[in-house]
Length: 302
Ligand code: FES
Ligand code: ZN
Ligand code: ZN
Image (cartoon, rainbow, N blue to C red; front, side, top):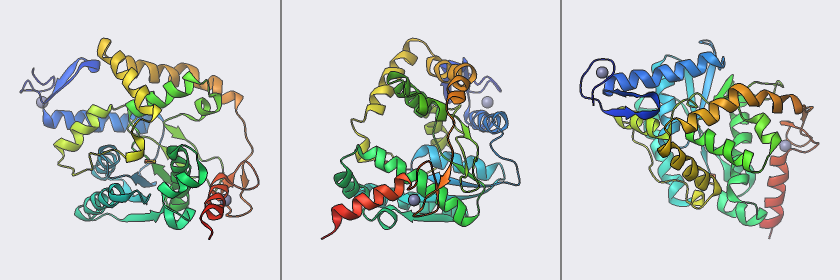
């Protein structure tokens, strides 16, 4: 297989784009996709400051790498979930990445903010681990960006992640989730930071290849709580469809974004208030994060 750009031996074959690239041209293709995502959704401008939520995995570190290379002013935020060795190792990967590039890494400890590490939170709430974890992540990333004066929060969600989330929401017709699923969620309140997903055009395989070719040292293991999660089953179904018909995931996600999303968005209109306890944005009186912290406190009280 030959590179579409220069005719050299290709390092990667991208069936859904009907193209193959050598290493330098793949890296160029990857960055072009990120630039296109930023441009299309007006995610940020050169004078914005971007806080990248990094987990130590390939996607978020690849994203941070591209944004640094593109000349944006960035910093990383790592959420220490307190999940045993997984957290220790993933934090070390983020610290090494930031140090090698002279970037700032903000560390937020979930145990400090919620009152206990994620494994204990799970026992206290009996909710699926990832729901308390996702709630804490959204809250703490927003709070960190506000505290440190960043204008945008970016996450490393890729095409596979987004297609799997969409699939899950459609399976259960969660219309509120459908209205909120977008590569860019604008700030609708002074205390709500704009959220963006600049990798939504790139597949998991492509972010892995980028991280590898750029020599990024990332944690390969998934969070131990992700095992058996339904999102993995959804990814599996979509992978099989992709295998049978390259481009299936892309068409599913992009079709939704281009043609269907607006209909769900119109149906959803909420008034945002400030939480009586912590002051962050909520739709009720007390935000979901404060309720979670309270539940954990009651559970762990002697
Ligand atoms: Fe949230 Fe694993 S990353 S539970
Ligand atoms: Zn080439
Ligand atoms: Zn609150």
